[in-house]
Image (cartoon, rainbow, N blue to C red):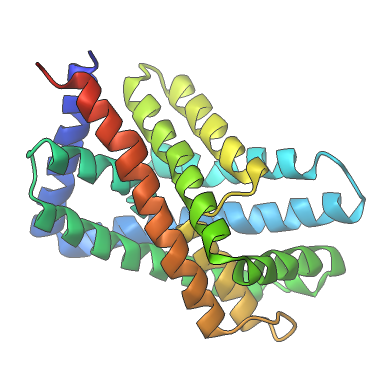
Length: 255
């Protein structure tokens, strides 16, 4: 069951390895774009969510989930390399022996750094817009960054696992979908689930933290940022590998 779809995932992983080997600058650029796309979703969520939160709307979290889906849809439809999605794609191929774990780890590292670069640049440009000077937007984004560095380790780890289960399921389902509308809907549902629930996404956090570090009014430190990112990145990886890639490998495996 699902052998054809799983093999499509493995084929995509092989193309990523080849892409990185033959055109490293192109791959880094694709990873940069993913960080930028997710960053655009973050700042949109900060702007819209800030105003709704200030108004006391009970629908703020749900609205944020729908809004943030913009970022993942840009990744899916425009084409870019997102670390969290690659946790599923690359590990699925390595578990089956289609690509080596060394190749997978190399893709992950380059993708992560490219995502970070895109996130930092997007956050830097956002800070030049002056939108953080608005009380609603500034308060919302500052509170989000501080909450992320203040959470307990196990809380962050659990939220990160659940987050990337949602993201990787969106990736898996998008491969099974036959239409672009279907792909968009799965991205929206996956993102809405993790954002509304308050889970932790490592690449999204890169944008939130860069904004926080550049903003004098946000009480976070580089140490706090590293604390969050190390735990959340590990949780995201575990969620994608152990709870999505491995189960579907076992489901499609021939006896």
